[in-house]
Image (cartoon, rainbow, N blue to C red; front, side, top):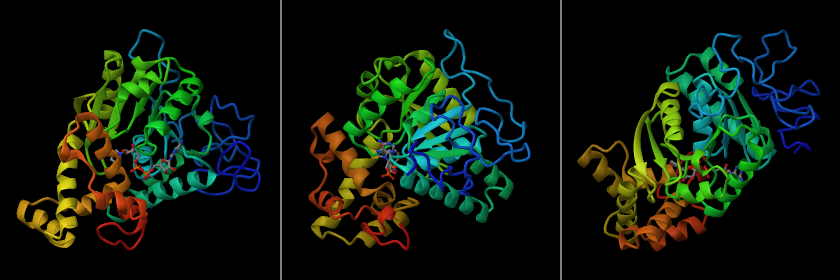
Length: 362
Ligand SMILES: NC(=O)c1ccc[n+]([C@@H]2O[C@H](COP(=O)([O-])OP(=O)(O)OC[C@H]3O[C@@H](n4cnc5c(N)ncnc54)[C@H](O)[C@@H]3O)[C@@H](O)[C@H]2O)c1
């Protein structure tokens, strides 16, 4: 890992196309990294490099030049997005932002994880190309708009930051407290992709709770059209309007609103169903395969509940269940012992290759 936390390659930095950029890097605008920063790969200037606050697509897109002045909707014209956490969800959120033409910086825990996040996005873009959903040029352009880093400081100039780290209250609170100090634009919006934790508590970790909001994407982000917008008791109407505009107009998603209650709309309904399927498998009532086949062929669900739990990640399902149980104290939300044991065993589902089913690759 380099001193500045970027994905370091022989003293330079990792370009978004994964190639080394020894010594020739250009810093992301506003990053206090003393010029060691990160560059995008789409240098349309004959290799001189471009700052990430310039149009990365050779000027085809019109970009907002600066953050909006105070008094305007906080995120009007959001063009510079940060994503904290580059796992399943963070990588997906970063991908849709880059595909929408946004300058996107993804922050992971360190350089190794930043590289893994980049590979995740690149693999997803490749898949979209192979399936005929994305032109090869568009995939290359999207990758060129992405920068991966191990340093939260690299998000200083962002207009919107979406936190997508593990579903753990302490980890998320720490991220929000740090972002509050780092993100320079007082109008910037700090959003969380939490599945179940109170948005209000994350807002209270900052000095700008009115600009903190839930922006809950669904997995896989490039495929599923829904975003839940979750407003806390402190979230301002202008913040809500700005992220709704961002999700619908910029990303082309469909928004539903939820109050700040554990699980919001979708997981409050979905997770008890997933937990019921785990209990059914645990008790020997039916096999995992039969439970899934039952719901796929009997109810026309695209995926049975245990395969879906594997896709979400059993650690994430268990964390959501715990949040729901903490909030509502109802037995149907309590995580079953089998689920907890599988998480302890590292059998997290698709991302580790084994959960209720086995998978060829993590
Ligand atoms: N998996 C789903 O289907 C799903 C759907 C909607 C929302 N969510 C939510 O999205 C969030 C992320 O879930 P995921 O499935 O992507 O988990 P994941 O385990 O795939 O990824 C989490 C990533 O966060 C990184 N991370 C942890 N601490 C960090 C920090 N301080 N700074 C930067 N990166 C950090 C980890 O290295 C990891 O790569 C959770 O809050 C989860 O509840 C998940």
